[in-house]
Image 1 (cartoon, one colour):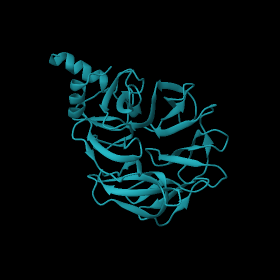
Image 2: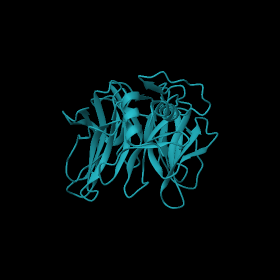
Image 3: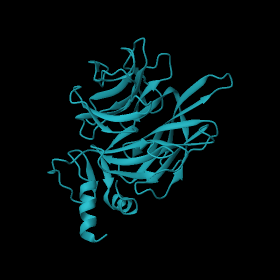
Image 4: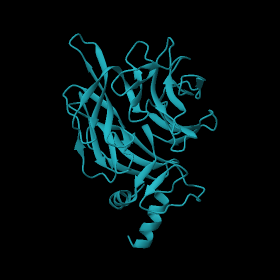
Length: 316
């Protein structure tokens, strides 16, 4: 491919809107078709893999298919790495991995047989990763714990006093998560497990919270009105509002880079999932991608690594 065509391909693939940056290049935001960048998992072939996409699902790039099933991708704050989970041992062991955005330098960060490690989340400075560890205790009861490790996989440790999952950083000292209780509730706590504050407190499950980019709101999942739907509330737990009204289960809600939209996965009639977006007030619901789930918005991508990925695996 000559340099002119390569530049055109790159420009069309990494078009961005406000809030999304491409490090190392001067991208414009004037193109009306510019969209938020997404990273997600999809069963487009024989096994679940990690993909990048624009918000319209027009261009897709496979980042990695490392294990029997890859999922829950999260891009590092500097846009260079992706943390994700992969499954081994006929899905009995789940491990956290990291990989460069161009699909190179794959590293397995956790490896504890018959434990399920999932849902990695980067600290704001990119130095540490939160993740959820699930397993059955000797009595056959499921346990769900929140763990922390350095970005290279070293110093893995359980956060004392926090039983739950779906954790993410509010800042480098506090975490947002859902409790491993019946029903599960959304809480905030210090990184050492102290000073826990409960934000939801009802008779139904509330889970998978994600903080808005401005730090003022939380999107989450709840089955308080029947099936699992997407909800939003203030950071203090007030003004809880339902955003989606479906007859199927919704999962994996997350914010767009500028905080104006919410992406989520919704079950379809075939039993798989599609990715949708909706404005934060619940309006303008649109399908974005077929056969996708575990979606996350990408604030920053490293331009050199993205170009390398495009050259080695052209967008479809």
